[in-house]
Every structure is written in C-alpha cells, then in structure tokens.
Length: 497
Figure: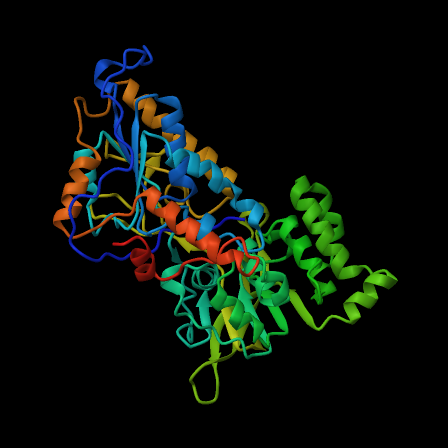
C-alpha cells in the first residue's frame, strides 16, 4: 500500500563548488523533433519538486510525450522514491517494484535527480520559476493530522507517519524509541496504514527478518510485550477505509486471533445487498468473522493464539489518559458514537457515553496532510491542498501540482499515477498553446550556482545508486534485500562528501 508521498526534512553540510551533472545535456536542437511543437518549445526546461510516485510519474509522462523536454527532480532527502521507500510496509516488497520504473526514468539522459535540496529553504519557488519554463509541485503530504485532544503530547503517543517512518528508515524518525513493554496498543483510524502498523506490531519477528525493516526497529520488536492491538474507528463496519487484501493479511497473521463484537453488525446483512461490490465483499468478510462459528481446525488455531487484534467501531478519541505519575500514556478515553446521515454523508456523533480503554501505546492514524512550501504558492489550509484546476495552480501560470498536494492524501499508487499523468498532459497542452514562457531558460545550471553560493551540496542519482549498492551489500549478510542507511551523515561520508 501506499500511503501516505512524503519528502521529510533534509540536511546540508559544507560549502562546495557546483556539482556536475552525471550525464551531459542533449543537443539544444534536434531536426527530427515532433512537428507540432514550435521552435520556442524545442527544449522546455521543467522541474519537479518531490521524488515520490507523484513526482516520478509526472516526470515519466513529460519525458515520454515530449522528446526534447529536460526534467530536473528536486528532493529534500538524500535518497529518492518518497513513500515507496518510507511508507510501504516492509512485508509488502511487491509494492516497491515500481522503483524499477522510476529508476529507468531517473537514468534518462534528459532527467536529473537533485537530492538533499529543500525547496522553500535552500531555493525558493520564484527562483525555480525564473530558471524553468514550468515548475511542478509534487512534494506530497509530509505532516500528520493532529488529534487535538488532551494528553496527545504524552510519551507513548505517536503519529502513524512517525511510527511508520521509524520502522521504514526515515532518518528524522530514528530517534523515536517507542516503548513496547506494554500489553495493549491502540491504533486510532481504520485505514490500510492502521492495519500495516497492527500487522508489524503483531507479526513474529522471525517473519520480518528477511524484509527491509531497519535493524534497530527489528531489535525493538523482538523485545515487544504487546499482545493485543485495538484498531478504533469513529464510524461503523460500512465505513472502514482499509481494503479486503489488508484485512485478509490480518486474518491470516500467524499466532493471532481477531476480536469483533457481533452487535456492531446488527442489521448489516440486509443493507449490504445494495452497496458496490468491493465494499460488499469486504463487509461480508467482516460479517462472517463477527457472526459465524469457525470450523474445527480454525477454532483450534484461534484458541492457541497468543496475540489478538480487534476492531472497535463507533468510538471517537476524547482524551489520552496519563499514568499515575503523569509521565506516560496509560489509556484512552473514547466517546461512544452513533451514525447520522446516509452514504458518503454519514457522520459519527457522540451519544454522551464514554469508555476508557487501558493501553501503553497510542498510534494516531487519522490521516496525513500537506503544508505550504513557499509564501509565493497559493495554499488552502483547510483542505490541505494547492488550489488547482486539473493540476494547473490557480492564478500562477507555469506552476503545476500533482499527487497528494494536488488532491489530498487519498488513493493508492495507481491513483497517483493517473493523477500525475493528467498534470503532465495539462502542462504539455499549455506548452503547445504557447502559454508558457518563450525563449531559453537556464534550468539546473542557474539553480546549481545558487545552491553552491548557499553552501548546499546536492546528491545525484548516481550517488543514490552507490548508496543503494551499499544497502544491498549490507543486507546480504543477514539474508535481507537491503539494510537501509538511516544516518544522513554516514550517507554523505560514504559518498565522500
């Protein structure tokens, strides 16, 4: 799964001279260029901000459909691929295969990756717009939705973004040190990310040994005392946001048993006949788990399970409860809810009743959010997106957006792919119509000079390939696909910076 396309904070060290491109730029004009673009459009310089799926799919579309376009991808991290690297669960390696496609794009002679560059700090969006014919913002949703309840700041309460970043090797989250000495964990939210975290918490460590989970995270999970994980949602079974694939993985998780309350499913049998097929199949599976008696073999397996996970419906977080000394989380107070409205408009309203659930770990998985990147870029703080029309930033010609910062943090990789292709299509339409600046633009040459003067040293894609080879080599010794590098200073030392 995907989730959340983040490009978290990066680091910069010493002053340096301009870092050369790893490949020479192509000739500025080619006789065989497609007839329908004018002379002024022969070598459009385009930059993309963010190297997650949205950024790479946008670049891929532009390079494929304009045979002279040059695309520079700027990224805060020293490494590319955003949430494919830092968000996809370690035990879902097949989802990461898309990295092979992104690597082909990055190796194009007309594409360059500039890591370790934070747009909005190291270089501004107006400076990029001055250097390029078009700028595409694809920097994702790197923040999390706050709970806004008392006790949220207590030790033992983490956002999904931070917890997932911790076990996936996001450098800024390596100091998280979650205490897993408790018996019970509570996850707030019922999406795929919530199930990912529950699965990682409950999976026998020996099953994670051959994934790309970080060495440090695996060490903590080996010592974990967590036996029960509650996955809490404010609405009901018909409104869960996870997919049937993720649910089946939870059901089949070795050494665990599910806990569901049959009362949460009363009257659901009649209602599911009218709902769309994917939702219907998912609800039928939940209903079966909650109400049907398991077969003899399955009953024996469940009876021997040492760990459990449960779905708690119609509960909304009201307060994180502190331990007697006030130094960490000891539980969570949940408001009991009921549903009002129908269809997509269904919302949970408090009934007035509350329930206290003891726990030693609270993970908030209620959503990611984007933030403004530069004062010059319009931003809707309420919706958490850049106002746009099919990817064209409102009232800023030549500025575009794709991915979660364009439409909000929803959907899977395929959704992002289609969305990014549409943005690329709009940009090329504007180029063809003569709506972008005419004449040559300096592109990365100007930006690298600016960065050099500011002591910022970018990392190239060939640099990343050296780090990639090092990770793979380190993983081989323990039978892992890779051992992720998590310390930016170590990465820079390995590159000789």
